[in-house]
Length: 148
Image 1: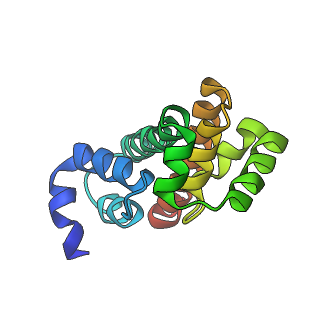
Image 2: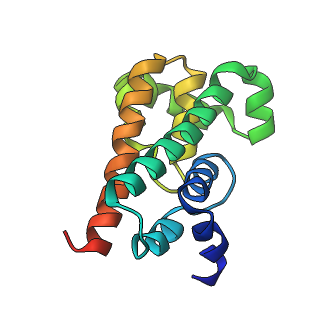
């Protein structure tokens, strides 16, 4: 937990930034920081909203990458093989914005968000459902730590 002491000292702004970075394609974990801060002076609602909003905005950054970076350039840069891209296309076409509920998942959450943007799923439903999924994950973490 020593690694996260500096972030915790930064308070809710540090949690927001950590949550944002954790949702981008950068390898970073916000749950450990949230866990450290759960034992601090911050209220549950403040922690939940800060982490959820930051993580959702980070996830929407991935959505934006998929939406606005030219498809060919994005696929080359991320080294996505065409077969895998087609499987993501089928998944997104089948379930649409509901896929955003799973953007909190490790490893596949970022590609889901990128695919939602790439295949032009509507912005507002993605934003809303992504927030719900990410907030639910943080709520579970806080519930386990604070003994709800």
